[in-house]
Image 1 (tube, rainbow, N blue to C red):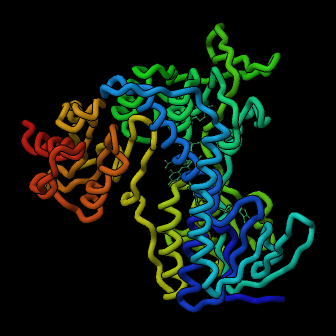
Image 2 (image 1 turned 90 degrees about the vertical axis):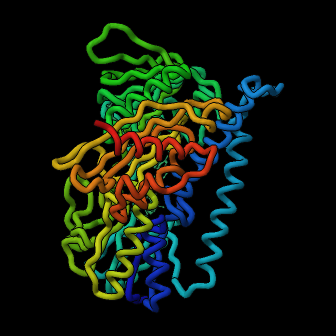
Image 3 (image 1 turned 135 degrees about the horizontal axis):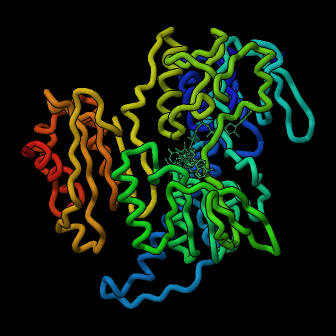
Length: 455
Ligand SMILES: Cc1cc2nc3c(=O)[nH]c(=O)nc-3n(C[C@H](O)[C@H](O)[C@H](O)COP(=O)(O)OP(=O)(O)OC[C@H]3O[C@@H](n4cnc5c(N)ncnc54)[C@H](O)[C@@H]3O)c2cc1C
Ligand SMILES: NC(=O)c1ccc[n+]([C@@H]2O[C@H](COP(=O)([O-])OP(=O)(O)OC[C@H]3O[C@@H](n4cnc5c(N)ncnc54)[C@H](O)[C@@H]3O)[C@@H](O)[C@H]2O)c1
C-alpha cells in the first residue's frame, strides 16, 4: 500500500492550496480528485470562473444593447449560449493549464477517483471504470467542497428544475426564467439571464435580497434589479413547481395566482459534500451536515483535518484558499492558527455589484453610516448609478469594522476597506488618503467624510 505524510481529498481551492503548500514544505502528499472535475474544484469547473466568464459576456452584451446611451450605433443580435459557453470553456482551459503547470513540476502524487475512508488512516480510491486502490495517510485533509441543495417538493430534473451546474451547461435561452433564492447564485444568474434577454423572476424567502448582508444594501440591489426589469419577489415562498406540457407552473404560498415559466433555477444554498466519504469508518463527526472542526480546522479525529466548503461557514473560494494555506502551515509547524472570517470579502458579481467586508450589522459600541448615492464624475460619464456605500465603525475609536458597497466595480473597490478592517484603520486614516479622480472609489472617501462629520 502506498503511504504518504498527507492525503488530501479534493483538489479545489482549499485542498489544492493545502496540498501544494505541504508538498513545498517537503511533506509527501497524495492529492485525490474525483474524475468529474478537473483540478480547481467547483470554483474553476462549475462555479466562480464559468459564471464570471458568462457574466463578462452579459456585460458586453448589455453595453452593446445600450450603445445609444454612449452615442454609439452598435447592433447586437440574439445571444447564442452555445457560442458563449465555448468561449468560456477556452478561458477555463487556460486556467486549468495554469494549475496543471504548477502541479506538473511538483513532487505531489495525483490520484483520480472518489476517495472514501476505509479506516482512520486508509483511503479507498474508486475510479469511474470500477477499479480501486487503497492508500495510507499519516494525516488526512478532507476538502471535498459542497453540492447544490434541492427544493424538497421539486427535485432537480436537469431539464426544467435546474441547479447552477445544470444552468451552466444550458444552451437554450429560456424566454421566462424563475430563480428561487436571492443569494449570490440567484443574483448573479438573474443578472446574467436578464442581460441575455430572458424575462427573469427572482424569488427570495426573506424580506431582502442577500439576506445575510445589510438590509439597506439588499434593498438597494432589489431596487436596481426592479428598475432594470427583473421581477423581484422578496418575502415570498413557493409551494409547488409542476412541470406541465413543457413548461413549469409556479404556485406561490398564500396566493391563488400561478405563474408559467420555461425553466427554474434553484439557488437556495449549498451543502457540504460529505455523502460517500464513509466518515464513520474513521470516526469523523458531522454537525449540521458539515464536518465538525475546531477553529484550527481539526476534526474530531486529531490527525484528520477539513477545509473549505465541506466545513460549512463561508462558502467562498478565497476563504477556502486562505484557510488551506493556514491549515498547511498549522500542519507543518504544529501551530493552531485559524481563518478570521471578518477579514474575508464577500462579493456578488451581479449588476450592480455588491461587496462587503467585516460586520454587516451594528453591534454594541459601534455606529454606522449610510451615504445616499451621490453622482460623481465617474458615475456620470459612465452613465451608471452612483455607488451605495454603508460603513460601520467603533463609536469611540472610529476604527472601521465593516462596509458594504453596491455599484459599478464594487468587487474591486471593497479591498481598500478590507485593508482598513484587517489593519484596524480609522475613518480619519482612510479619509486622509487621496483617491484618484475620476473614480468610483471617490464615493468611499466621501462616505467616510460624511460619517466623520455627521452630527
Ligand atoms: C455557481 C457558483 C458560483 C460561484 N462563484 C464564486 C465566486 O465568484 N467567488 C467565490 O469566492 N466563490 C464562488 N463560489 C463558491 C466556490 O466555488 C466555493 O466556495 C469553492 O469552490 C470551495 O472550495 P473547496 O476547495 O472547499 O471545494 P470545491 O471547489 O468544491 O472542490 C472540491 C473538489 O473535491 C472533489 N470531490 C468531492 N468529493 C470527493 C471525493 N470523495 N474524492 C475526491 N474528490 C472529491 C469535487 O469534485 C471538487 O472538485 C461559487 C459557487 C458556485 C456553485
Ligand atoms: N460571488 C460569489 O462569491 C459567489 C457566487 C455564487 C455562489 N457563491 C457561494 O455559493 C454558495 C451557494 O450560493 P447560493 O446563492 O445558492 O446560497 P446562499 O445561501 O447565498 O443563498 C440562498 C438564498 O436562498 C434563500 N432561500 C432558501 N430557501 C428558499 C426557498 N425555499 N424559497 C426562496 N428562497 C429561499 C435563502 O434565504 C438565501 O437568501 C454560497 O455560500 C455563496 O457564497 C458565491
